[in-house]
Image 1 (tube, rainbow, N blue to C red):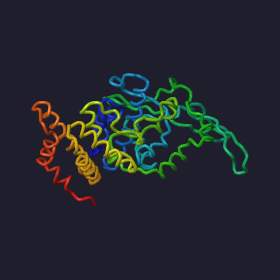
Image 2: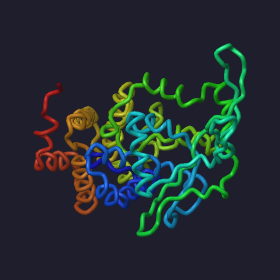
Image 3: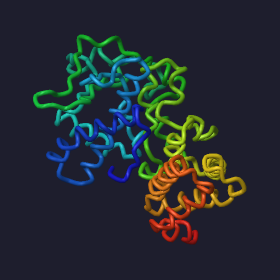
Length: 343
């Protein structure tokens, strides 16, 4: 978790990082194993980002929200976090034991014919085919209500208040007909080209967790990047451009070269360095390669760019590109990143 780059400030992903830091002392005090601690932090961060995304979309106040409750299917956590189903299950149990989340179906158990069944809440009737091929209607769990404690404090725990819950928002029978099941989504995720969250960067794609909590027209870009469009499309100021540079490494491998080319063109404009686009292309490409070796090349590059922009504004540099190269050489970036041969 410590190596993950910080997301853009003022976004649900950034608020989730802040929530993780508030919850970290509780998790580290009670979860001793390092891998279990990492998994708990990852799952908590994903759920916190989902909660803050809903808060933002619904135009609610994030700064004063202590606990937030929403409907989801926790079986989809492996798709979002990249962890296994068992790891996510153990992590959610630990988080509930610590009071950082509370999950429930909101159903009441009943005894029917000597069997324990659940009624109400997210348990809904749906139709299955039995072994003889006949349609049988039975109760099945469509999902889970999850309360996430976003601002831990002594004496406060996450709690779903069942009597305040609306009806289950998921039509399980329709979803099964359309193939919108957790099992189907898990199978699709296995065939996708995915990279470690440590490398892909700053936020989860939490759309799978929220697909039943929002209208369909709001589902398509929650905490994700459409790699067919520019990673710099929202970069209107030099500072936003510097932040966007780190996203080059998180683009899909099929589109990474295009992102590097566009980043090089934007740097030429930023530094008034006409004719040096190929040089900046190599700078960004080597930085991307270094990131995959575990070197924080983009953070160092952004810091040098920031110093160059300040010097340009204060001193009126005639060749800011040369000054940037000087900054990178002085901090060892050129030797450790630029001049390192590709594997």
